[in-house]
Amino acid sequence: MLQQAISRDKPVAGALCVLSASFTFAVLGALVKIVSVSLTNEMVVFFRNFCSLFFILPWIWYSRPPGGVRTSYFPLHLLRSVAGLGGMYCFFYVIAHLQLSESFLLISTAPLFIPIIAYFWLREPVMSKVRSAIIIGFVGIILILKPGMGVFRPIALIGLGAGILGATAMVSIRRMSGSEPTIRIVFYFTVFGTLISAVPLAWSWQSPKPEIWWLLILIGLLASVGQFLLTKGYSLAPAAQVGPFTYGNVVFATFLGWMFWGEGLDSLTWVGAFLICIAGIVTTRKTGTHALVGTTAKANANALQNPS
Image (cartoon, rainbow, N blue to C red; front, side, top):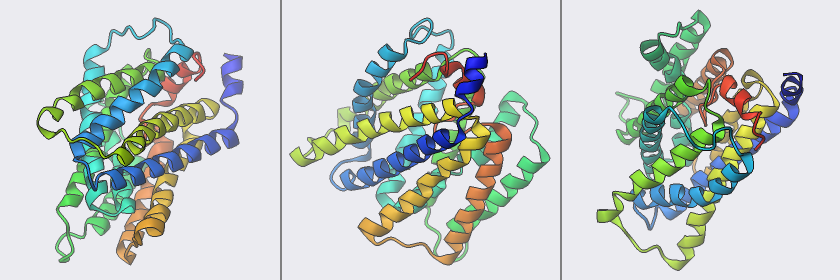
């Protein structure tokens, strides 16, 4: 127990790992935007999971979680995988059709939905500060979506759906975080994600161009590296300390979108982004759940027993 406490008392190192993960995911999003020009969404999602599987397997072997990959939470793993995969389809779709920064902003709404879903599913009480943060966050969502202002884009609702599905996946993880190490959760998500996303290829297969293959492999590698960095970051410090740094992905995505596609945000979107990030940070600190992976502090404490 003392060793675990010491290992989780490195907030600077933990923050750097989480920031690095945020940058990794932002680059991954940029690559998804590039390959989506010539590949269908179904193809991109499949190769993201398929290539990740090959990088995850050595991680499983090295981590050696107690009991291996055997689990008594198979239905919850399946639910988490279906919700997470659905969120991935939505997220990659909006990346292909919206600005990179807007796509990351919409997926970053997930922490706002976690307390709501947890309340109805797990009957977890919602603290007053969290309720206030959720309201502020929804004001930010309205400013980004701009309903009734003549610039509303229905496709943005798909991005919002990605946030809701991501939140559902996170809450399902909370149900099994008491005994399931993070690496096992990642393993089942990657396996189920690969198998399920292979089904649509029966009618949507395309042969990637030679120059696209290495980008698809790189997407899978970045997904695995980002997952590793997040797990490492949350093993070095409590979620309340490092969780807010996951919102660095919005900053990095905005920079990459501006650099490579000349993207910019209007003033209302900037205000909405600020409100969503503030609300998400408050919610993260109060619930101990981070935005990108959805593991709780307790789950990450389990992961400490199996260093990644």
